[in-house]
Image 1: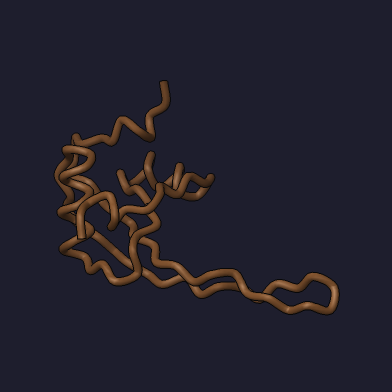
Image 2 (image 1 turned 90 degrees about the horizontal axis):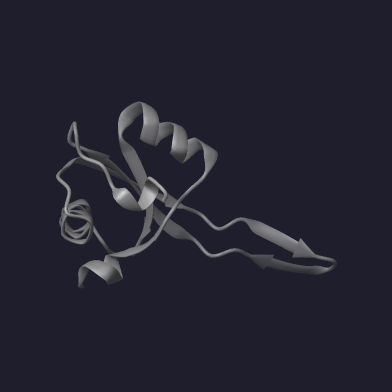
Length: 95
């Protein structure tokens, strides 16, 4: 897989913003088949930063209901990437 296939989208929420400021951690939705080594290489290649650690977790899709019809959101994989001290990703810094 190429780097842009592994990294699907950044996750920007209030919790991830606090993680970024306190621990220099960034969250991404990644390909379900990607492992930690592939995720680390992809982040380093796309954003030109050094990564110290990668934590991954699977988010199960929630059951949702529309009247009588029961459905399910899709399941996905999340990666929390810790950068080396002094490294930043400009994408998250804003304009």
